[in-house]
Length: 332
Image 1 (cartoon, one colour):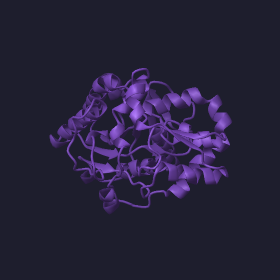
Image 2: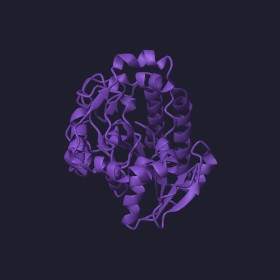
Image 3: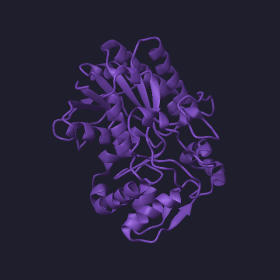
C-alpha cells in the first residue's frame, strides 16, 4: 500500500514504526495528546485524545491505514473503561473513513494458559486487565465479522529493544547493567519467557500494512527469537558490555503482600500467570504467510545493552518527552 498512514501513539513500538515507515518514504502522521520532540523530518503531527471519538475521526481522515500503538496507565480500573472506549472510537473512525487498522496488541486476552499461545485460543474472562483486553478484542472482531471495518491485530509478548526503558528488560535490566549496577526483575529469572524485539514488531506491522485485505479480520503473532530465560538474555547484554551479570529477582510470592502498599505491585500480582510457568508464543501462522527471520537475542540483547551504554546521559536529559510516549504505548 502507498497511502497515508496515521500512527496513534509514539511510544516504543510507535516510534520504531514511524522511523521504519518514514525511511521507506511513506506519508506518516503521528497522533497523540502531546507532540513528540523527536519526529523524523517529513512526519507530521496531530493532537489527539483517543478517548474522544471526534478527535480520533479527525486524525483518521485522509489516511488509508491507521496503526494503533497506544496504551493507558497500568491500572485495571483505567483499562476496564478506556480500552473498550478507545477501540469503539477507532472502529467508528475506520468505518466512517474506510481506513484499515493495524492494532498493536499484547497477549493478555488469552489469560492463564499452560501451552504456547495461539491466535485461535478462546478469549479470557480472567481478572481485570486481561478481561479488558479481551473485551476490546471482541469489539473489533464483531465489527470485522459484520463487514464494518478491516482490522488486523498484531499481538506480541513483552518487548525489549534499543532505548526501550519501560520493559522488564529495559530500565531495570539492560540500563542498570550499563550503569554498572545489578539488574532487577519482578519475575523469576530462570523461567523460559518469550520477548519480542521492538524493531521486529515494527517490521511486522509494516508487513501487515503492505498486505492485501485477506490478511485482515484476524490476529497475528509477532515473530520472536527462540525462547530463552531472562537471565540468559541479560547475560548476553552483560557480555556485550564487558561486565559480569549481577541480577536480583523479586519472588512472585511477594507481589500480593507488596500490593497492599504499592499500587503497581498490586497490578503486577494479577499478571503472575505470565511468569510462574514457561511463557511461549506460537507465531508459525505469521511465518507461513510472511517472514520468519526474527532478530536473535545475540543480536538484540547486544544492540539493546549498548544503546543504554552509549546514550545514558542524553536519555536522562530528554526523559520527559520520551517517557510520556512510552507510558502511552504501555508496559506489556
